Every structure is written in structure tokens, then in C-alpha cells.
Length: 229
Image (cartoon, rainbow, N blue to C red; front, side, top):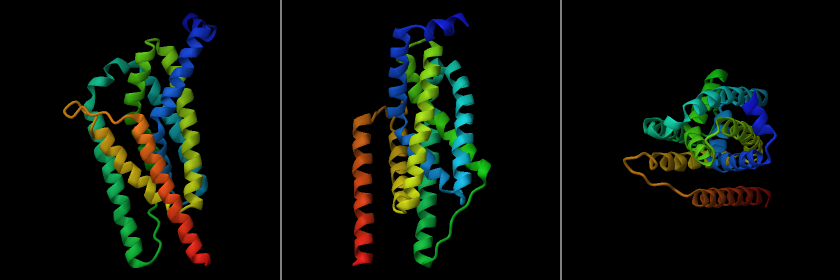
């Protein structure tokens, strides 16, 4: 308790915590995209919101465990490899079903089991947490500071995911766009394994996301204009 009291009452520690929160948010843009896309596999809006909530608590519990072994995370490149392959599978599976829908000219919603979606969200958060935990530990080796910053960062990231999820419901083109970004995220994650060792800068990834969103919105409004014309 003394260690917690020292952190909470120290302005220096709070400034470090805010730095960790900012870092968590910047590194969680790709995670928010994946989470928002995964919730679309549930047919009901209520289930989508519940999945984000349960995924949040699952991620919190997992983050406690992962911070405890955070110093060893950098060696677990196999986790990154598994995550990148899984994301590629998600993207290919989505576009396969999306192509079938377009070919058959009918809408068929791929509905997954609620708990399978929740577990997928927790699993993906574990994979994306590797980089953010290591980066946070580089700022401060105090596990309490890393924990507080990480937990607030997860909460903010879930908020971003919920905004993306709502936008997907009003702009259908955002769903295939999300899976296109997931494929890019998979490549980005794969390239960080030690055998390749290429790190795509966060600024470049944000630029790709911004351009992709801009192009998607342009396509959406051009479609609406052609329909209303």
C-alpha cells in the first residue's frame, strides 16, 4: 500500500503515468480497429456493446498478469507471429464471405458466438499489449505506474473502438475498410519479429489509416450522390 500511496501522491509519477496513457493510446489505434471489426460479427447492437465491456474486463485481468512478466515479453516473438497469422486469417475470411455476398446479390451476416468474439478480443489485446507494455516499461520500471497508465489507456481505446463500431453501422463501407487495415496491421506486426526486425513508424501507420478512411468516406458519399441523383 505504501508503494501505491507514493505513486498517487507524486506529481512526477503522475506525469509519467500520463506519458504511459498517451503511449498506450498511440500504440492502440490498430487494436481499436480490430476490436471494432470483430464486434460486427455479432448481429445485435446490445451484444456488440456487451462484447466490448466483457472484453474490457478480460483485458484488464490479462494486463495484470502480463505486466508481471513484462520484462520477458520482448523475447516472445512467437506471439507476434501467431497474432499476425490470425489477423491475416480474419481478413481473408471476411473478404471471402464479402465476395460471396456480392456474387449472390444477397446479404448474409456471418454471426459468431458471443463468447467466442469476447475471447478473440482478449486474445488480440494480449498480442497488441506486448509492444505497449515493453514501451511503457522503458519509460518506467515501476509496475504500479505501468499498470495505472495501461488500464486507463485500455479504457480510452475501448471508447475509440465503440466510436468506430457506431460509424460502421451508418457507413457500411467502413467494415471492408477495417479488414483492409487489419491485413496491413498483420503485415506490420509480422515485420517486427526478430528474423525481419523492421518497425513501421507509428506516424506512417497513422497516415495510412487517415488516407484509407478518407478514400472510404469519398467512395461512400460518391455512392450516395449517384443514388440520389
